[in-house]
Length: 195
Image (tube, rainbow, N blue to C red; front, side, top):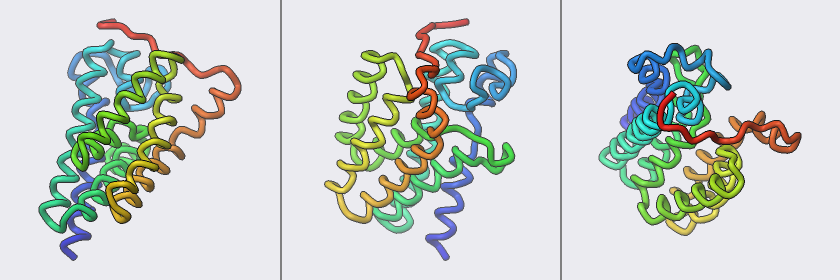
C-alpha cells in the first residue's frame, strides 16, 4: 500500500500543469489555445518566448525529480524509477485538465537527472545536436527516447523497464508528430527570447 501511495503522489505531482499556470502568470493567455495546444515547453515558447519556455521546462523537470526522490525514500531505486513513470503519466494525462496534457519530454529528462546524471547529460547532448541540426524538437525527443531506452538497461533491469515504459509513453504521445515528420508538415523550432 505504501508503494501504491507513492505512485499516486507521483502521478498527482506530474499532473501539475506548469505550462498552463506559467503562461497565465506571464499574461500570455491559455496555452491550450496557442499553437499546437500542448501544455509543454515547446508550445510555451510559441506563447511566451524562450524565458517562459525555459521556466516551464525546469518546472516540469522538477516535478518528476520530486517524484523520483519520493519513490527513492519509500522503496529504493526501482520504485523511484516507476514513480518517475507515474509523473510522466500524470503530465501526459493530468487529472486537473480532463486528462489532456503534454508529451512528457521534460519530465523524462527530470527522471534521467534524478536517477543517473550521466544518462541525463548524454541524452541532453543528443537532444541538442538533433534539435539544432534538423530544427525539430519532436525528432530530437524521438531520438532521446531510443537512446534512453537502450542506456536505461545498463543501469539495471528494473530501472531500465521503468525508463523504457516512460519512453514508450512519450512515444505514443508523439504519434501525431511522427505523422507530420513523415509528411513534411512538422513545425520547426523557433528560438526567441520573448514574444
